[in-house]
Length: 95
Image (cartoon, rainbow, N blue to C red; front, side, top):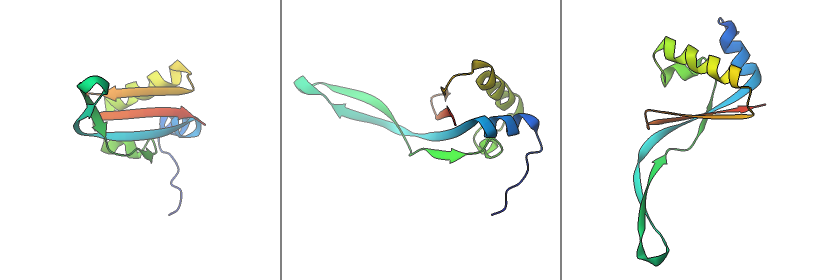
């Protein structure tokens, strides 16, 4: 599959600087702990690596997506995890 040049400068900056991992919410699992107690934990499908352009499948609102990308670029961290409405886990990892 050929590489498609980015039509948006912000998308190009994100793709050049970060690797984007996306995991969707699967459900709640109960985990047995020591002492006979149990704990409920949110579980997610395995992570997928996506580009900034294909992230629009998960975040349809253009304004929210642009705001997220600007927050990531301004933070300047090596790892920037974000949880969106408890259903989508997005993690930006610097290259």
